[in-house]
Length: 293
Image 1 (cartoon, helix red, strand yellow):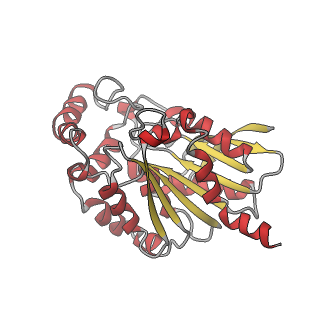
Image 2: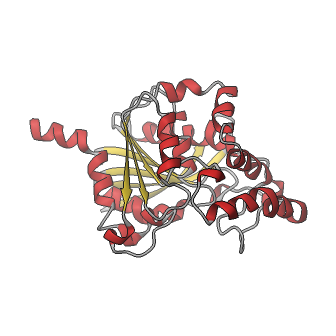
């Protein structure tokens, strides 16, 4: 049995985020799931529930300006994607460890949630980092034909929406949560300039967080994901330069669950054919300890 506990997360700059814990009777570790751009915490509910049934106390949450953490119309929201990196992701990890002191912390990052996963407090007991469809966001390294749509999104569609609507609305060209203008602007900068991510992290004085991140990192990506393909995933793993890293390609044909794309690894259809290997890898150290004791 697991219980659902709604929670408000307070960030270092004073914002409140909406989150919820899924907690088993006797958790053996705590997990934080960092969402992708435009994805609400509800999208990760089935994965989180499965993790809780396997012993994790799991925190899912919405970034500022997204889902239940949104406090105003997107066009009036001043949040930046860099605020997600500097404040929201660290706040979630801190809240999870405070709620369950003494337990190891495992982080699961989807897309942008994996790019910024290293920015948590280095003092936290991070055990492992699982990257699911997490990669560089640079359009030029993505797979065709999506890369050409991405170019148009950064150069034509997005600017037109900002001019006409003041934000990026959910609709035909963007199926995620509405994006505030400054969130989109940061995201665009990462999308059109392959060096922007590195430069921005350096300007914020956060390069050492990546250099000092030592927990093992494993990246899984479907072979039909046009965003997180082998080239863009390798780019992200190189940011974790002093950690033990590896990449695993997930064959959508072998999985037998149809197309996977950029978010299929979190969908319930993968519960029996993929999720168990993520849980086994994350708990590998604990499993070895129990076998040797």
